[in-house]
Image (cartoon, rainbow, N blue to C red; front, side, top):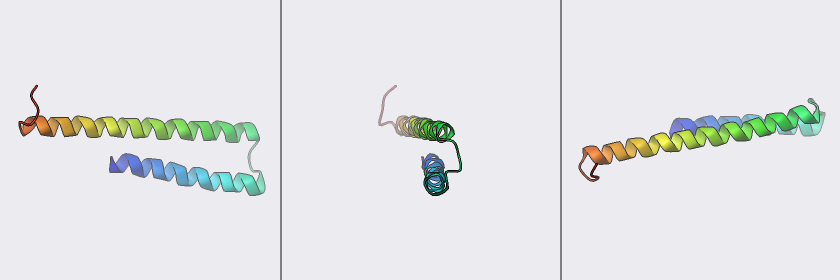
Length: 71
């Protein structure tokens, strides 16, 4: 989970930097900036969902190994 959060945080920081550069200097065409923004949102959502799924799987596996959960 920590690795997934780190990836998401890095993407958010990079996107925020790009957004500020776009605001002040208009480096990209608006269509390209919107595509990058949507891509960042999709990647963040996917990474968070996968990392949550892995965390839940590992947690259930550990609880089953300790006998707290039946199969």
